[in-house]
Image 1 (cartoon, rainbow, N blue to C red):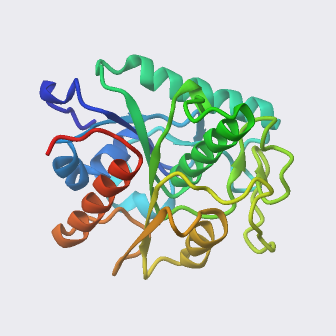
Image 2 (image 1 turned 180 degrees about the horizontal axis):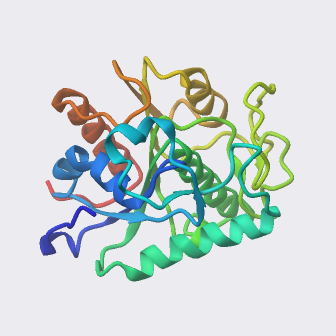
Image 3 (image 1 turned 45 degrees about the vertical axis):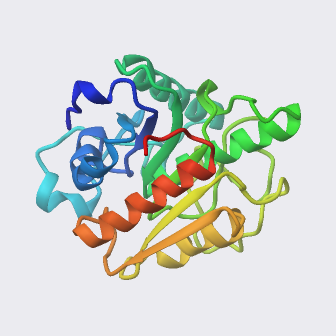
Length: 263
């Protein structure tokens, strides 16, 4: 896995969530170009999904030796069927484990996810927003007990997922553990759109692009959501020009979220 320099130990931390059918090590390799540019301001920590699965077909040519492969929740009928509370509990456990295992001392401030990981990241942000609303406290902690402030969503699909009793009964959100219905009509959550800053990174050649667009348009307030489009398919941007745009948007989202950064 990508090892960051000791100089990042004090920096604000971003928790990174891999896509389904990959794992934390693969995601750290996919994010190498982003990490090189981001690690002057952030420490990136890569969490491991809780459930084993077959590899995503797209990663086999390059990462077929990096088993075992994992997911955060099922997306196929053939994958393990578990109750929602078990799925949520396992996700919470693995995220807390990654956070507690990291040697950094900086505040946890952001989330960055790819594909299924982006969906979980956006759902975690929404969970925090609902807790803020319920407790009427802008400092209320969110999922896994942290004050997540912003998210970088790489090829993340709608719909969001309910991660607690606050959100699990919202008809606009998917029930954790259930196979998603990508063709169903989707709508804005009952609790309103997500207003924590988000960066949406869309590959224009990605077959899932319409669902990525729905995540941004139906679930995120346009005032707080920025969009980066690039000429790629279902992968993490890697060309210098595209990476630079994602990095710049990430820094702006962090600033808008009140994260103190070095000038």
